[in-house]
Length: 303
Image 1 (cartoon, one colour):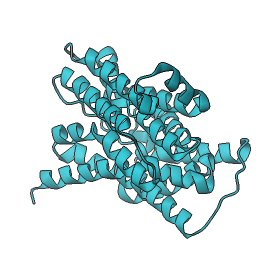
Image 2 (tube, helix red, strand yellow; image 1 turned 180 degrees about the vertical axis):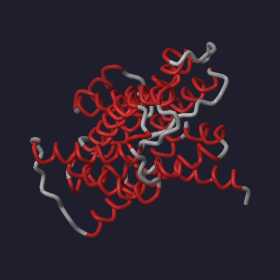
Image 3 (cartoon, helix red, strand yellow; image 1 turned 180 degrees about the horizontal axis):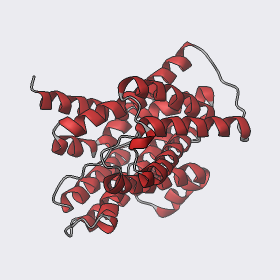
């Protein structure tokens, strides 16, 4: 098989892997706690990344990217893991994951605003449609109903806020990476820092949830770590050597794939309005992408 096709297929595997992460993080957090589970996931994922991506010498990092990019990446991963881990139930975890998937639309806007990238009028309806999609998801069977949406958010404002903040942070990270990284892949180092931050929070924070260690909890932990670690490694291969247009376009449908995997893994029933909202989030992202008239090389699509 042609090397570009192999690389593209490898990148598509990353999209499949990342589509499972919401459900897996939720399962791990139920056994090990939101903070303890995240600390374990990123610790093991760091080992996988060392074995697959390898270590990049600190001397090769542009200083601004090392500092700013590192802070943004760590902040995003913390927001992602804790927003899902703190969800009150499986349905809410899937909803929170959908809020996080506003990042593609936000990334396009950030690229236009801060990276002098040209965009046409499609970016406006793209953002609106993506936001309406999230509103439809939060409204449940009632559709886009502001009081119902507020009730959903009010039950767990921290998780929803972390998910929304994470989407904004990842958009900023993508812009920083484009402008400052100069081809350096800092994912291994950044994951190690995330692991350290989460362990510090676990030992010195308020959460001291005992870890429920058994066969299934360990299996879910290893799966989540594999998905996080090897997902990044596979995406890196795809973006460097594969068809970027195909990969970027496919990545914008992760919200639908993720919802399907999460609903199956967490045994959660999702109504028709949820799927309509997920499709609107995808459509909004695609419109924002089309508005830029060319593909942006970003480092990751996320969960």
